[in-house]
Amino acid sequence: HDCLELGAGTGKFTEKIIKYLPKNIKYLATEPMSGFLDTLKAKCPELETMQCPATKIPLPDTSVKGSRDEVVDHINTMSVVSALDDETKQVVQQKIRDVFNKHFDQSIHDIDLPFETELIVLSKM
Image 1 (cartoon, rainbow, N blue to C red):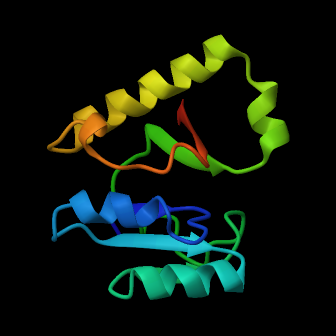
Image 2: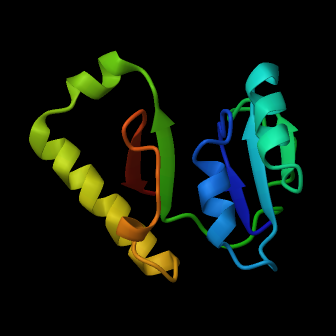
C-alpha cells in the first residue's frame, strides 16, 4: 500500500482525499467500528478497506510504502476540540492548508471539506 488511513470513520473525509489521489496510488482505509465501515464502503465501493483498530492492523511492518511525516486525524469529540486554545486551532488550520497545497494539485480553499463538523489535527511524526 502507498497510503494507510487509520480510523476512516464513515469516509466523510476519505472520499474527499481519494478523489484527488492519482489512480496508481494504492490506498487502504481502516476502521474499527463495523457500522462506520459499512457506510465507508457504501460511499467508496472501489476503496480497499479493513476492519481493525489502529493498534492491531493485520499487515506486515513493511507493507506500507514510504515513511510518514504527516498524520491527519479526525477528532469529533467536542470536549477535545474545546480544549484547544484559539492559537492552536489557527496553527492546525494552517498546517492542514500547507499539506493539501503540497500534496494536491489544487488549493484547499477550492476543495469542499467538512471542517464545520470535524477538527482535523496534523502532526509531524
